[in-house]
Image (cartoon, rainbow, N blue to C red; front, side, top):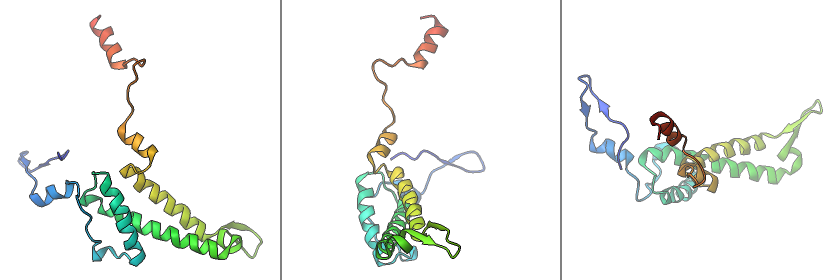
Length: 160
């Protein structure tokens, strides 16, 4: 894997990265255990391994991406807990909360689900986990009947 940037020291000379720095960018072949410092609980660790195995399949998962894995594990667990609360409380109190004034709003549990969905969508897009995200990562292909604007401009400039 080629690293896209290089470090430059004060003398404007390119400084080679150390082996440890290069390892940060290499695609992981196996999933490490979650670091103790990550603070994940038991159910979040289960999601760590589930998402981690999916991320490994992309063959573009590096040590620098472990924070994305932690984020996915945390928010999927939060989402599941919120769904359990919504299901146990039902419509009143689960999906909708009613205030003393009679006004209603979505419950905090629904807000957590929405926030978790947002974070999980970001992680999914980062790794191209959905069909839509994979298409974005691949880029668009030029079809045979589509003109190249670059070629048209060159023809006009050079009179071809």
